[in-house]
Length: 134
Image (cartoon, rainbow, N blue to C red; front, side, top):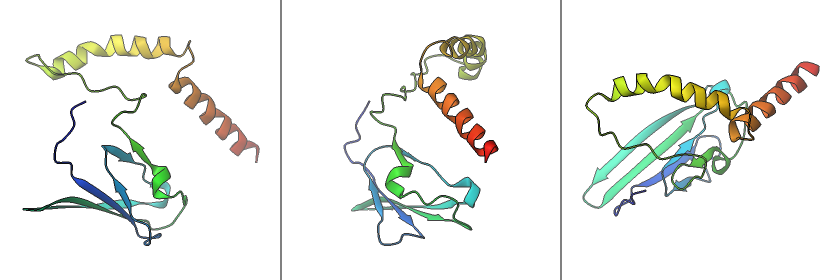
């Protein structure tokens, strides 16, 4: 992983919990509450002494009230996320299309061993079953 010598400061503000903005220092993913209609406004501020991204969240209705720090997942240095491969060919789309059978086979094979995908699928089915039983 390459490290940016001049990292951009990222600050996430929650319209419901306005007292506690979250500063993110690494490449991250923010899970939005799609059931509550959550959207974000991304404001990139650039200037001579300023490189900052402000992210403001807004929800029509709150269906999940998890704090921001629990909804942000670091992508850099995360053992479950592989880095993107370097593209060295003339037609990356054609290469992706040719990779589909191999990738589908890898996914199918991975269901036989304990993986994060398998655990997630098991947990999802358990939650759905619990919900249906209520």
